[in-house]
Image (cartoon, one colour):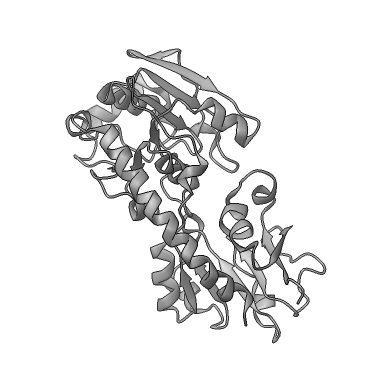
Length: 336
């Protein structure tokens, strides 16, 4: 019996830069089918992408209404929470009930089920044995990639001080379509912490340059799955993350990581805002999602190594569950 070949429509970004589509779709289903990644613009389906003979997968962006009405269309949608959170209830309710939804977030599952759609809920975990585990022999090394401008220099300085970081590994490049004002560079030191600014032309180079890090500040205020912070947890890192999906679907605050809030104490006063603008020009021109004011005393008292140890243990268990779910994943996508 020949192996089925399915097409998955995704953005060019997912083919040439991001590994998420391969990590979450292509590689897991490889024992069951071949998946061809086809770039599209989110509006016009490329010629020959739809033949009616096989299910058609849409990665992140949903299928266009023109395809939903075709009688032979067997559509699988794999939405990502950071993008799908913008759809309201009426939008979900309008999706044809034949569309199958693969959910990698509890928030997606809730919305798909409320809309009466067939949904398969999955939780992804990396194989911890595929990574070099972190070590805690010296003072902490913090890693932050400023992909979306979530945290500013002031917060990084305070976080480094609270955890006693000897080094901050910093990557400054922002993601495509992010406000350019999110970009900033750092000096060679933040307080007592040495700053090492890196650039990486490949995933392999990135992993090599960040190997020394054992503390990770997750880079986004919303995630589809969150492969970067999951990768850090699989290495046994202590992960700090914004308290929102999908980070708070994996991190149990104070046990296997730390969840940070937009502003857990109080709204900024006019005087505080004015002083911030005078001391940090980036605050004046760009509103960052993560506020500087956190419970720094509590963070300072945390046992970072213990957090990382719990994160690694959770990932070891989670990876076994993920592997067990892949056959159901394949059936849901391929068998109609």
